[in-house]
Image (cartoon, rainbow, N blue to C red; front, top):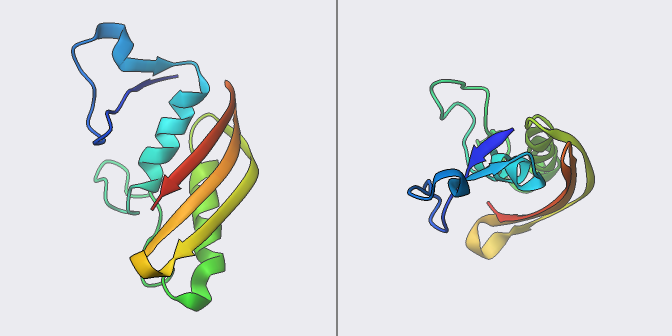
Length: 117
C-alpha cells in the first residue's frame, strides 16, 4: 500500500521522488485514516460513501454515542486497518471540536492516532 505524504497544511508533498510517499508501513494507513476523518460523508464525488456523517443526525448532546460509533466505523473501514486496540474521544464544547485518540492495529503494525476534528 502506498500513500503520498502530506505537509503540515494538508497539501501533497512534491519534488522528492520516492521520499514523497509512505509505503507498506503503519503511517500509510494512519494518513488514510486522517484523510477520511477530515472528509464529510458525500463530499468526494468519486465515492460519496467515504467520510464521516458530520450532520444534524450526529450533532447535539444526545447524539454523542452515534458520533463515536461513526468515527470508529470510519476508521475500521479504512484499507489496511485490522482493528482498533484503544479508542477515546471527547467533545470540546467551547471550540465546537472533538479530539480523537486511538491505537489501531494495521497490516503493517500499530499506529497511534491523535486528531482534532
